[in-house]
Length: 597
Image (cartoon, rainbow, N blue to C red; front, side, top):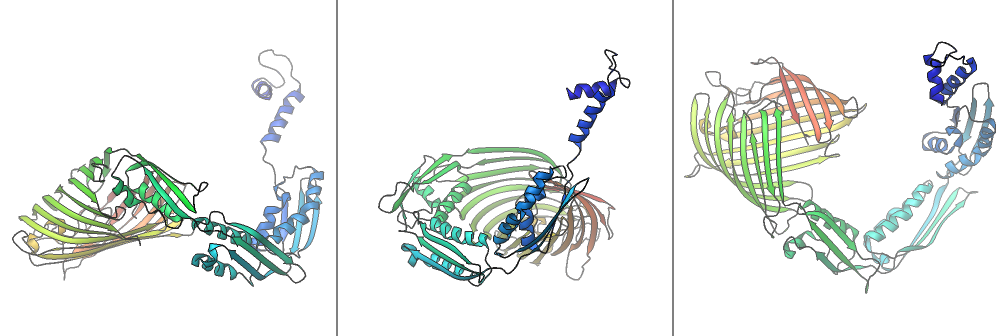
């Protein structure tokens, strides 16, 4: 109705309706406009000032005061009622932080436009915890973890009282009891006594834990894999003390295995028999085969077509296979890997496989085939180790030299990656170490030894920024460098190297000016990212480095600006870079997707 009247007022000549041409009173047009302005205008907040307090005390009082939520339009009787109740609200807010003797001076004033309340508060002395008594009854009396927690809680003696810390004290005892199998634990006594006259608090807790439960029968329902193999993922063992940590560890191991779509772990805490808690685990199979296909573009290697296949369950022993195909003008690869879980399938794998790689760059052309065997281990501290033995055949042309080389290369790599958010990290690091080498023999044409380290570190900065530092260092010892395949030579330039230069466009050159790669590599980078919106940001960076040989070090530097899109599948980076050193190109655009950690 209001909308119809407004439409008539707006569309007709002043004072007349369009369709009927009958007079409309001025009042009828003014009323809806007044109502519209009243409801559309934002409520003006009144001023409630709190003086004399700072930090958490001030914040807590402001949160408790009901007056702070009232607008200027609130009725006077309501404001005066809330003002009268403010003393009790302030006292409650300060008692929560241990202040039991506040002195409050307050005033309330009204004017034609609004009202204003002023509070000047002296918090008084804070209550100090004078004594803490924690009594443990039941099996927890001799439990080392409970003794450790009890000693930690007793350190609060002599500190200022906070009611939330008192509640947390009780919660920590209850949480530890559930984690360690004291399923019937409860407080038979809990007191917080306040001696206002002396500003002292006395805390008394009596915690009865009863007997500690143990795991009973562990029943696993599944017809997917061999029961003996599945049992390797399960850290819940019959007869062990009940532990929620072990239940969570088992769920995580089964989930990360990739074999199961859904996992149900149910400890039957209601029907314990003889102090035992039976556990049932029900596993539902995941999809066995996975296919993937993608089309993309990378400024380093050009348009890219990708196809992937994996079979997560080749047999009931948990063997699985991965295959991948990448086709691009600059670099194409095809590889397949067969994986065999070992005694600890959450940490140890053996794999073998092979692959082909074709590279066609301005610097060189190569075609290689590789057979590999790998032993993978994940350490509890987060490091991942891969020991390998590669048999490589490479046919390559670089500069004016062509060679066909066969190598047997043992080596290892160690990787650790830590991030506060896997999809959008703001704090973390990635460190990767690589060692490889070969010794000349009938199945290996040359001897060489090579080591490299790559690191990325990111740290948040004030005002929605973050700093990213990156480095890559490598060294090779080799007598017959002409025979060293391009796969083991160092080059620089490109999106993840020195931006401003084309992919693998930097390195030592031969007499005709062709880049032939080097024995050593040094790259460093510093970058600042600034978030503009929730999912967008900008970046500024400087990169420096090169591939080189001893006695001929020429550092190249590139600078630029970038745009960042933090997409649902990970960050997308678009960089515009200029080379500051001599280069065949004056400008480079670099594009890549994925986190650098």
